[in-house]
Image (tube, rainbow over all chains, first blue to last red):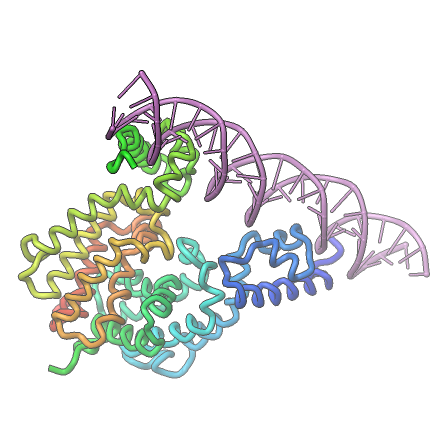
Length: 196
Length: 196
DNA sequence: CGGCGAAGTGGACACGGTGTCCATATAATC
DNA sequence: GATTATATGGACACCGTGTCCACTTCGCCG
């Protein structure tokens, strides 16, 4: 092997592909974009495209990667309530709020790409899962493993998209409802309930 | 028009299609079954199949219909805690429990058929939604519209399937966790929390 | 600077599924 | 039993996917 690193043209094409895919996803909607479209828009052949990204999901994943990593960093080492230090209920609410922002900003990317089962198989999902699970454990809840997925399920792109588009909810409303959920499950008090 | 009702052969073929589809879905898994397969197994032509069911989802929907209707009946007029009479938190927990049973019994049907966005467009979803929303309203929660989807999201077939298969959870565990969720959100007390 | 090997490229190809269409067959009415 | 609307079923074209391989380009080394 003479070239241990990525070749210059390969890097150039990778950038082209990602740029073109981002543009197409944003304008036409992810599910309506075919591999052909992306290859043509990027000015590369089909073979080149498939070499790196076997399907649409992996392209969207690459596009989302940087944004998700930033949030992950904040969860691990950022300031409270997102980062360590705050009580679990508040951290969960902050996490929900941050995820709502992420979904709102990149809905077009994430929709139809991370959809269905493939969502669970991404590294990002594993991270969110571990984070929420640690919050549940810290709060002393029984059987945190069984509560993680129900708490993460509202963040599925399809659910968020349905609430926003079909139900006409605002990001504020959604984040607020999720904060209530977090308080109800993790906080001792009935956080989401009206003071009675 | 001479035949205002469904013709005899049409009814017969409808039954054949549903029976064949149920068999195929159960053995091969819904996503792996093509329209061709169903038509051939049912002994009808493609045109006949497409006439009634434009896609797999509508077939699965027809198959699930009766089971869902039974549960809907119970929710409306059955005995507490599933039917009217019990406090909202207990009714929601009972609903979760019944849905877990439904998912467990018909996972093969529902998986890959009601998947993704199409789930929200079924009449059944609208019913579950209205039910949960009424429970939220009865409990006096603010903005029930924003809480409905998060509470229904854990029942998405993909989520349930992931918990059962990949995570190795039992139906009991899942139902129990959801009961805790119901208690935390709707019940004043921390139902899912350990007594402190 | 020229050639060499390996990685990268791109388009042609075959496959499979979907959805449509229409000539034919069949059931229900008269 | 004739008639007419409806149902049937298979043939057809279309589209997207994923693979494959002959060719090109890159990077190194003599």
